[in-house]
Figure 1: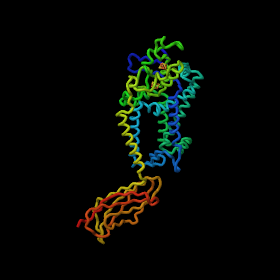
Figure 2: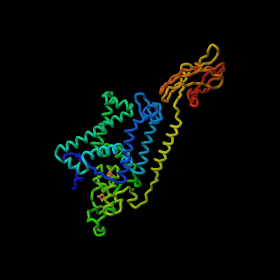
Figure 3: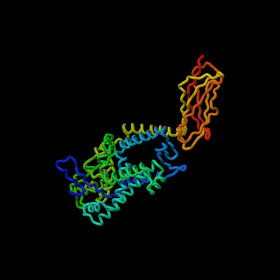
Figure 4: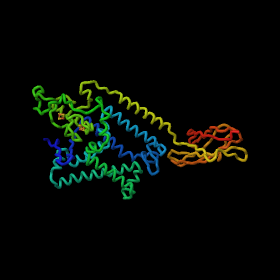
Length: 463
Ligand code: SF4
Ligand code: SF4
């Protein structure tokens, strides 16, 4: 049996299969280039984003201590958590939509596990060599060369993990201060904990566990098959064309060999990062990375056969039936996703950097002053959602002549503060009106176009 297909035999009294280390072979090709591009783009975003500054502060910062979330120009406060919830729902729906449409695209190109595993594999390759060199090194007894290669890989992995950990914390606390503190061993307890925790998790998942995370830990791998149907794009081996497989003399005419197109070179198995054989059919372990497509295409080019023995296709296409890209579940996911995305953008567009809530004093219906005027008391909650201190003026209108006390009603509200302002509204002359609606208007003094209104009830004796 070839060494790449070996698995350790389970002990007779154990239900557990011992883990056989996977040594994925490096392969070039169009899908490999796409995956590397995704790795650069996503890891580039992750490591560089916290270093971007905007308006004199970190452009993307989820400041948990001050409960302010900065996403470029957008500043979100705890009152805006609906937007974050909305974003999470959009992300989940996108996953459903793209899975129904094109299978495990997420796993192949965007999942952090895939992306970081590529990076850790790259460090392994530059220190320990290609697939066969790594296998030989692991099998060899300890020597100075082995110690040097394994040691330098560990140094690279640990440094990269720590950088990953501190970058993660840098999304929640300003990264420049964080790196400066780390340099002077001045990180707080929580900062140290999360840096080490996230760094260690990345080291463990992408460096050591790798495909085992996808196979045994990832919940998505478990339920994604529920979103598959026979029109979902999958990566599969064309058994009809490939079988019976077998090696053959170079240039031997196919008709004489009696064999299918698969020359049984096992390249598709050797490049597989999860260590499966795509020729056995669709398996839940397959993360659809398309490395086996690149590998098989290269083999087909060499032997002069048409590409696509392993390819993206659908079960219906394999069964010689028509594939329907647009089908009810894709339409339903797409429609919900589109509606929620448009709603999200519109809500963001309409979002105002100030909010007003008005609560009527419930202790007294109304009060009649000595001069005959009727007074109602309100508490206004003014929320400054901008990132700077603002000044606001409150006015009121409604039936009759209404006056505010204090007047003018001007308030200074710090960034992110919910300011409670007690206001008295007085009707200048007694009128038996009962209950009426009045309207409070809050205007930003520095930006008069920025106004919000809120209605409230004004109570007076009915006769
Ligand atoms: S079977 Fe092919 S597509 Fe699936 S994980 Fe292995 S190499 Fe990637
Ligand atoms: S790479 Fe292609 S030809 Fe080689 S074993 Fe796999 S399917 Fe067969």
